[in-house]
Length: 195
Image 1 (tube, rainbow, N blue to C red):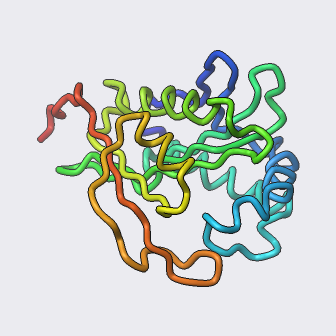
Image 2: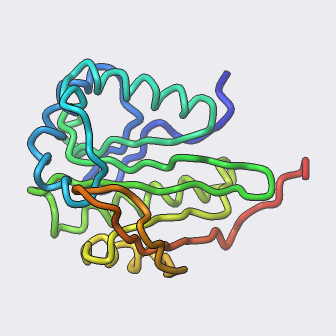
């Protein structure tokens, strides 16, 4: 049963954001393999099997299930003119409703695609979808390592405000790492009729 009307594809000037299907598995495995060292300082450790097409096909399957249930929205980023080449991801996870109407944002971009405003473009469109009257989230939370200046800059440019520093927040790159906590709230949030 599909509980959310979130679009499964969003097109921007340069990008296609897609919930995808199993046909992306090889491209996803390639994306993670070629960016393995680039993502290592910022992401939790992963098993060797993570970098295989079968593991990525399973991630897509679970992502589509979460999408249908309204518990998470993962978009794979591709150039608009090359939809089978994955260059990034935007993920709204841990979607909570009730008095919270919130989620946690994660994102990643191919090392070769940085510095062109692509993540800002993708996040702008995806956040607009999450804050739309159809999905109607009130708050998006995001955390980043203070050393990750690029990540902090894109969130700041999008209007995320710093809410504090979480000590020893995630185990990344061999140690427990501090993270800057940020959030963005929806100025057009509509109170649900069933409150």
